[in-house]
Image 1 (cartoon, rainbow, N blue to C red):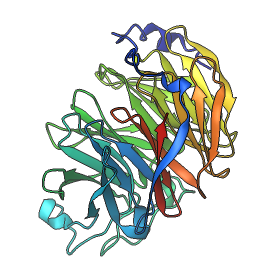
Image 2 (image 1 turned 135 degrees about the vertical axis):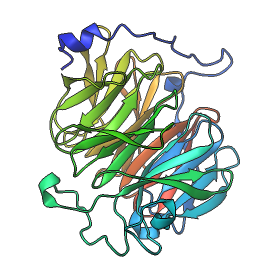
Image 3 (image 1 turned 180 degrees about the horizontal axis):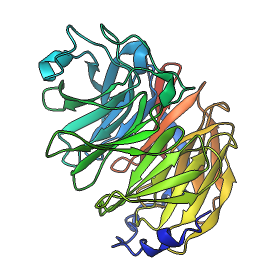
Length: 360
C-alpha cells in the first residue's frame, strides 16, 4: 500500500495545519459517545451528512423517496423534501411526467446554498431496467440523475444526467466541480458548476464508491470497491495514478491537514490509514463486520466508523488506530457524519432511524 512513486511526487501539496480543539475543550479522542436523540418514522436513510453550517441531511432511498433536513443544534426535523422531479422541465425532452428518485448520498455546496444528492435509480416512463448492486456496464441498467436542492426554497432546482447507480457525490472546495461515482457504469462523472453540465466521464474500474477531495481542490481520491486500489485524479489535467490499499475499499476521509487518508475495507471489517506524504501505510484497525462509512473529528484525533453487519459504531484514535469505544446502535448502521459545531456524531440506521451521539 502507498508505494506509488508518481503518487509521492505529487503529494507536495499546500497543507493546512491540523485544527486543534480549543484549550478549554477536550480532544475528541478523550471523549465518549453518548446517545442524545433518536429520530424515527418515514426514514430509511442510506447516509447522513453534516453541512458544517448548521444542517444535517438524511437520504432515504426508494423506500421513502425523500431527503430529510435537520437542525444540527436544536435537533429538530426542519423539512422533508420529496425526490420527485419533472425531468422535461429541466430540458430533458425525452421524458414526460413526474419521476421519482432514490436518494443515496449527499453533498453540500461550499457556500451552503445547495444540497446535491445521488439517485440510485429513477422511476417513471422511460426507465425500465433499474440498477442492482451486482452489475457492470454490460448489464445495460438505466442511467440515473443527480439532483440539487436549493436550501432556501427547499425545492429541487437542477438535475444532471450521470451514470448507472450513482453512489457518492462530492463538491470540490473551490466549488468548481461536482464529482459522482457511478457504481454500475464503472465511472466518475465530473460536472462543471459554471457550465452546469457533465464535462467528463472518467473510467475507474469495478464499483467506484468513496470520494475525497483535497483542501486545495487539486486532487480527488476515488475508491474502487470491486478491487484493491484508489484512483488519484489530478483535477487540473484529469490524469490518474493508482494506489494499492487493500481489498474492497468503500469510504474515504482525509485528516484535516490532508497528510493522512483513512479508508474502510468492507469485507474485512477494517479501517486502514496511509501517510500521503511519506507514501506508507500507518496500519489497520478491526472495527466489526462490514465496515461501511466513516468520518473524522474536526480536531483530527478520532474516527467514527459504522459496521453494518455488527450493528455497531466504533470510535478509533487516529494516532495509533486503537479502538476506543464500540457501541451497539441499531440494526444495519450504514452512514455516519460528524458535526463540528456541536461535536455530535450522526448515524444513519438503514432500517428506519437516525441517531445522534454527543462526544462528552
